[in-house]
Length: 141
Image (cartoon, rainbow, N blue to C red; front, top):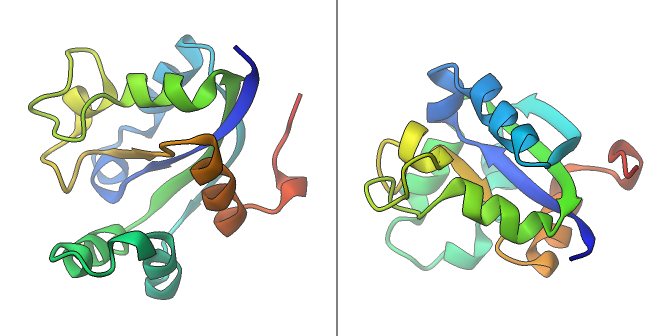
């Protein structure tokens, strides 16, 4: 598998409960390196742009409200097969259905507040990374 860079967000509920360190350690133990990171509060405009594909869905407003409710940790993760590896480490979208030991099983509250976001493809990762990071901010060793 080739080395890739993917995008991840530690969501407000996980930041609020102090889970950043545990989640980052989980990535690092599984050979995903932090290539860039920033703690920020998303603007409503940036969040709506990020989740534009869900704009017509009934949960869109609630999602934007939640994601702008407090700080989030934005990250570029680097490693072999990073996109799929991150998806596996996160677990199922619904924390109740996520495998034991996954991030969402451990830190997620429910489907909406499931602790983390991760890109679902290499193309999505490129688009999502470009929304939040300049290329020069990402360490690509």
